[in-house]
Image (cartoon, rainbow, N blue to C red; front, side, top):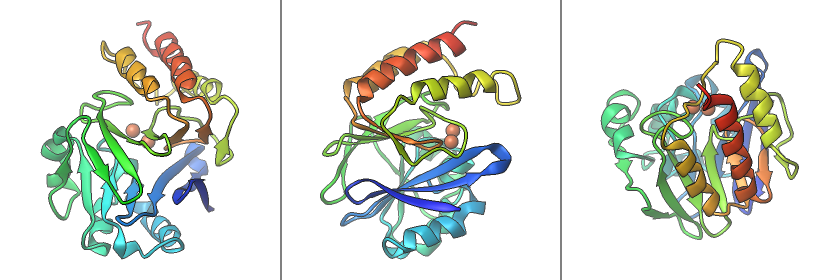
Length: 242
Ligand SMILES: [Fe+2]
Ligand SMILES: [Fe+2]
């Protein structure tokens, strides 16, 4: 059930489809001098994510654990990972660290990164982007890998279904269909539309990402700036009009 796909050299998408919620849960593993895992997945997923990581590198060698915001699919298994990997340090925003992470899920203090700060893992260079309320939550942030142009974009471009690992076709329409359907049920207002939403999406578009590594759905490979322009339109239309 868990599928591993290389989305860039030594960057892997680990994906598990959960039919009860018709959703994939993706983690991203970066195989580098200092291995990085972005999203731990929920505690319940830990055994399968650990086994998937073990097929690529020693799980105990994980050095950095990144995530966007404080939710189970983002960092629910942080403690399990830190128990297994003695040097694994969480990286997140200062708000995430102070408000929730250090007290609730971490074995050891997280390392807070400032907006724009760089983290070098060896051959790869990650830029930390503080993005409050994008995709959602006060403490939200994203990571952009600058050498390959890969944006680890968490819940942005969220797509339902057991979709293909990678796609070059437009993901904005799929995301739109998902948001429209969520508005009809218990997941309504999944993403807030705030005074900061548009400018944050514009900032992400200006990075011109070539790969959009989303937590739920296919990784998009193509014109990331154009995809963000489409997403901004969709979010305004569906979430911004009330
Ligand atoms: Fe989320
Ligand atoms: Fe998520």
